[in-house]
Figure 1: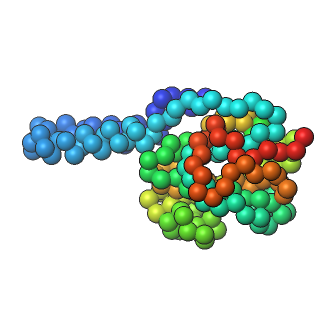
Figure 2: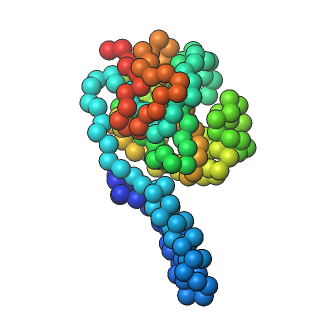
Length: 213
């Protein structure tokens, strides 16, 4: 399943609900009340938009796994999947970003694990270890790469469309996060990073790193 619809299918329950509320407010209340329902309906369509992206095809290029703003780039020890020293890139997604997650590089899905947790604001440093999250481990020709979907204060559901054994191309959609949240990317130590904290990126399109041949 390609999940290439202009509006992610996970958004339709919200869109239809708000459309129904809009109609009920129009019929039983007044035009002004219905306007609020219309705004919520249009925002739901906007939030769950699923645009096409121009995906770079260069060998070893790492694309952003999500839209948003780079929070930090740090060297850490990853203990869940890679189990080694790595470089971590954290991306914060606001309510106004596209919330589709994409594979950063070509690879085979080797590990998927959902972990329950809290719903702290996604920009807090401890959110990545305390909040509910979903790990997607990729086996690539450059070594192991890990993407982590992290919930936030508003985001309460992580959606992942892949499972172990699936093969992903760089930039391919693999899930989404409902409402404001964070996406973390763990790359092999020594990877050349092309972004800096504060920089805005576009999932599947912005180059954020380059892996050695």
